[in-house]
Image (tube, rainbow, N blue to C red):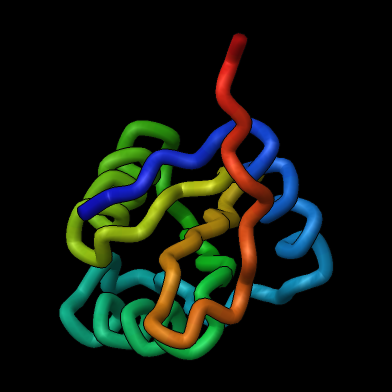
Length: 104
């Protein structure tokens, strides 16, 4: 149940994420079950989080990002350097996205 964000919604989430610090950091052990569990908890609690992926080359980093998005069913909002911004709406709906406008 992956949602698709419009450009306007992504811009809104980027503005909210700008001041955030990474809440999960991947170290030398890479993407483990414990790291995925932490990402899940953070998404359930905050909806919008930053994840720092340290020390990986571009191809490996993209594979890690794809795995995180697939396993958590979150949306990748943006990647800047080694920092990934993720969004997944929780049951509480803490973040209210702008409405998706239809093209005429």
